[in-house]
Length: 309
Image (cartoon, rainbow, N blue to C red; front, side, top):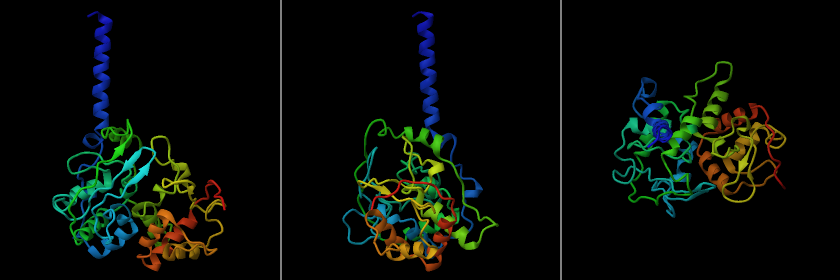
């Protein structure tokens, strides 16, 4: 073996080792169980129920084909350009769900998208938004879920195209795109505005559907909430900034009413996945729905794609 071949071999080993290290995001860059992510009180299932509804947890995790929306056995297919994801069982079942999880494991899943066994979750699970939740609120959701019926059975494995089927690559995706921290109140804004921001940008994860994404599936920050592709089929998910292509002509009351009954100001009704969102936001209080509206109307307008009539 000549010197050039040896150098090439050494370089190749170095590149492979570096790639392996970098893709292990959760071992090197993520959750360490520090004090900022320890709850300060016992879980409150009543608050957890509210946040569970705001987060739309049943929309993805309800058992496929089940009559009871609170049977959280998972399995409803989510079709994307990267393949089909099957949300997991998050019922309190001790074998197939999260019945044996600890509070730390749940917070780690919410904050960093990491399973108890260390595997990274794909960002089809919107931990990029959920990481803005406070530890107390995260544990309130966990406490509420544990009051629901356990459901046995596991959904199919994800059916993804190469190279997205290589789960370890998610570690590199996290290194590139996962950031943010708990949303803290801003003193220069009202209590309603701060609550709305927490619901929209955090647990409600509105940007996950209402934003365009880059080729790696990460939200394009400067176009956040300006609309995105409709993964369910043709058309787009609408712009929800106060731009003329979005909510410029809508009042705060119009937005709050849509989140309650699903009707637009011109008496059209929402359909598709947004109908499911409204089914969840209808469980919130009028105060919370108005807070979301106040926050959305306060945002800078961002031009999006005009929807066809």
